[in-house]
Length: 85
Image (cartoon, rainbow, N blue to C red; front, side, top):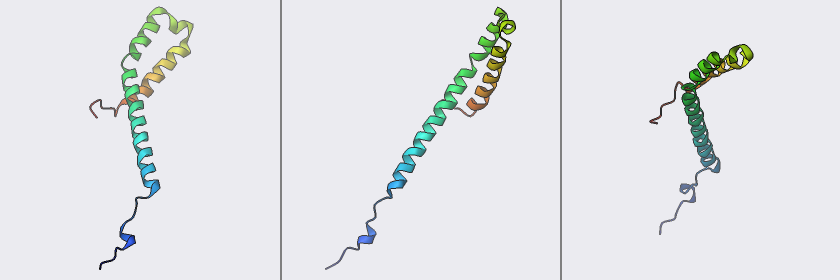
């Protein structure tokens, strides 16, 4: 009669499943942030131009400068985004 070696039946480590889920959640969150930054980059120049044309640049120059900086940050963060992934 053959005996079964209990060491051959190992359950996966509990931490490994948790690490996998956390890694998947982090990847999903990073993709969402990249997508949001990518799509925000598209209309922001129109908002900046509208602010310049309406005179908001003279009333609130820091607001317009903040929009320009935000556009640059969104462009940098959204650059690696691919909608087909």
